[in-house]
Length: 185
Image (cartoon, rainbow, N blue to C red; front, side, top):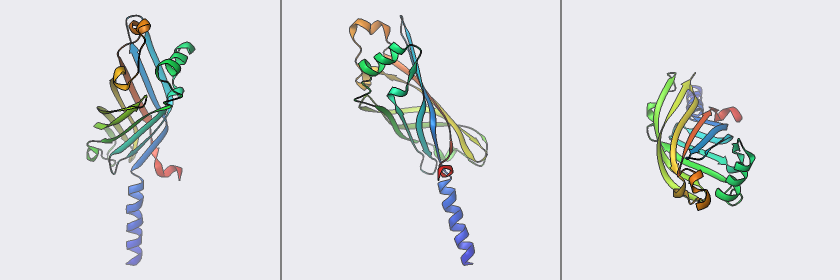
């Protein structure tokens, strides 16, 4: 009886650990399209963790890791707008509002709503967005979401001289392929 109890406790502990998933290769893309210029950049080294047991989710990305088509855009982005030496990363900390709708026992795509705090350029604002989580073979396989943020909300100033070149809002897309957190232990 004692051995059965120990095995049951270890199984429950493993299940709890198995509900945490991570990625160090999350992809964040942003784009803004103004009348004179379209600006796009991608970063494929975002870190993210999902704890399905609690619904907690976090993302972090280094600002200098965004890659642009033109190197001058990257320089202006980091030095003039994002001040990436002063504000080196962007962070989202939030929660899946409906984690109980995700069934690890059934492969499929699950619609979720995520709410939390998004910090960009040293400014933190509440955000809520829709996303999808894909389950495959009893694990979170991938997740994705899109949102739009206003540049001014995060204290990013655009000089009047180039104001027509830069949109007032930025579309952000995120995507990550996950693996169980226990896989790194």
